[in-house]
Image 1: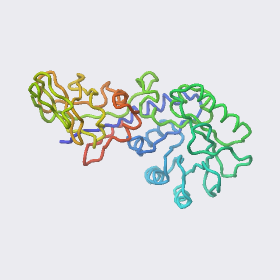
Image 2: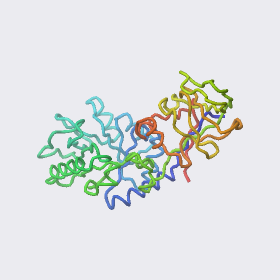
Image 3: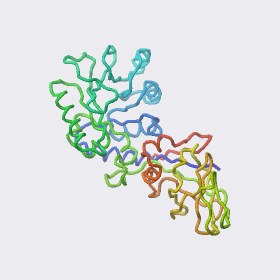
Image 4: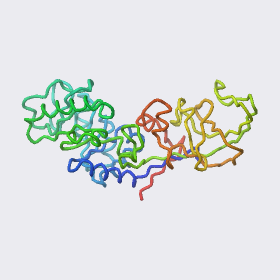
Length: 341
């Protein structure tokens, strides 16, 4: 029996693509599948996104793009991150599109997107060239706070619109998931959506508020049931000491699987009921406080069935992006299944 099971619902992903296309109202949707599709599986989700209407796929590195190209020979694949000169030949051979975000040589022989820094303060050109090279097919920027700062986002959008107003037929793409949903002026020709594709809220809220459906679920089972007598503890550091006789269930999932140590205190579902994670989450196990003695094998939902990844992120004081990317679905740790209904 597997220690845990990670399930990817491609039907849910397709629904999210269609929802976002409706929001974009004519702009193209470019699916961001970097970091192995935010932990969901880049090839599976990339293929499903394209089938549902996405116009291109976006990755972070040339290596990610090459791996994606092996499985998906036809679609446009844009590398969002910086590229070394040594990687240009590989990118050309794989028919990738590259981003140029620093002054200097613009590679020839493959499509290029110029990235303008409008306020992110990371990768990006200070100014766009007056006469871009003929192989420049797109101009882009990246929004720093579309999820939390309307005024700064509007200033970034305005700067981008002004800087690109005189450009001809190049594709302008600016919006991320948060901006695509909340800032119509940012949608332009295409929007690069990542987190929303996976049914996760870019605002840390219930994704259903924006019509999104979580794509990933994660389940395990109780492997041992123990009675802690009053004064007894469970886990490293004795962070949980029973004030009265308390039943606990041991679940074979820990921070090596992606259930972070600082998620102690979050809730999981046992037979559909919320139960608290107690003690210190260890590398390979966690403990759950039980209302009574339950049977070994009782199902445990770690994510899914209404239990949102956003809830765990709030407990861990992080974002869903990080939790999803760090989920370990390696076959030595978990069973990964893909539903394509």
